[in-house]
Amino acid sequence: MDTRTLALDDEAPDVASDDAPATVTEKIEKAVLDLLEDQGVLAGINLNDVARKAQVTRGLVYHHFGDRRGLLRSAIRRRMAASNAAKTTPKKPMPLDERIVHALVATQNAVDTLKLTTLLHLDGSTAPTLMPNAEATLLLLQRDLALGLIQETDDLEALHAIYAALVYGYTLYREVFARDLGLDANDLDKRLQDEIRNIFNK
Amino acid sequence: MDTRTLALDDEAPDVASDDAPATVTEKIEKAVLDLLEDQGVLAGINLNDVARKAQVTRGLVYHHFGDRRGLLRSAIRRRMAASNAAKTTPKKPMPLDERIVHALVATQNAVDTLKLTTLLHLDGSTAPTLMPNAEATLLLLQRDLALGLIQETDDLEALHAIYAALVYGYTLYREVFARDLGLDANDLDKRLQDEIRNIFNK
Image (cartoon, rainbow over all chains, first blue to last red; front, top):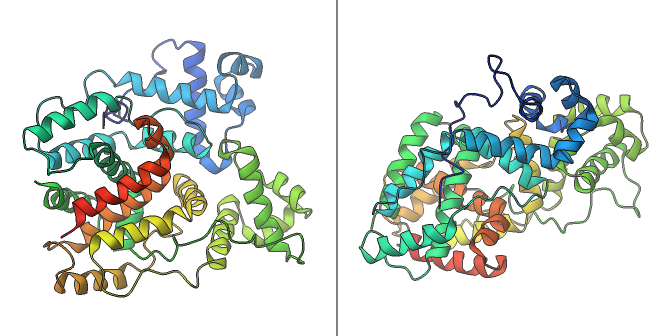
């Protein structure tokens, strides 16, 4: 799994800050994210409200983004781009368990982006992708397998899907699981990492 | 993981059908699910629209459900209850890999319910739970471990979280993963099951 889209820091500065002059599109993208944050996702995206908050006309929102989905997609992409440069899937050889733990930590640091992306998927959108660089990642896993860093399997694509499901599923539902198990979420994080090492260590 | 909340068949008959007289609450619950299905989740839940579709007053919707979240939670619970009886986590001793595959198939049969539940969680709701019977499931895993059906670990809670994350994560993102990998989703399902057996088989 390429973690480029995952390794996004939700602590990254907002695209449009109060200190810097924001372009119109940035202002609109910030408005939709702020509204979702303040009102919850069940309130949906109301383009009139977005326009009002961004102090632009509704027509301008349509002009730039087309519809709700286009607007949210664009806002997510900008947020991703803002913190994209430094963090990618480690290219160096790495035992599979450490690779999964690395992806998990990176994804948890971008949990807000994952939640927004999931909302888009629930709406039926096919983007953004969750494995933006699947081909390169599969080559990398083949290399690590040849080096003996991954336990024997002839299906690296299925393995890729399993570890992506685990990483994204845990990040998304972490707090629900911790509560259901009666555990502190930070403690569960540590125990999960150890158990990933137990299961995926060759 | 207790699959009671998962093992729900989205092919189950609607709570309120056109042929049977529906109670008012059933009609309202059906209306909100139909609207989400028709208009997408980014449109949100508009209680005026729900009332109009259910042919009741908006006041009645508030009276019965309080708010959007209460309404959606109730609609999900009724849908769960409708197909809850027969399908639970298998109580008999079972190798871990087969238990995970069983949970995966049951969850995939209830993908619509998982998506609605995820929408509630994205809104900040803490219910419905995803491990409704965690204590009993942990006892069952302890028993299977003692019987040698699970590979050695001293952390069954973390193992539980890992397999729940894998099952829910895959069910939620299955189509995205298949597209990213350039595979048919049904083929990926089969390959994933085989790879689960490869990884979790003792």
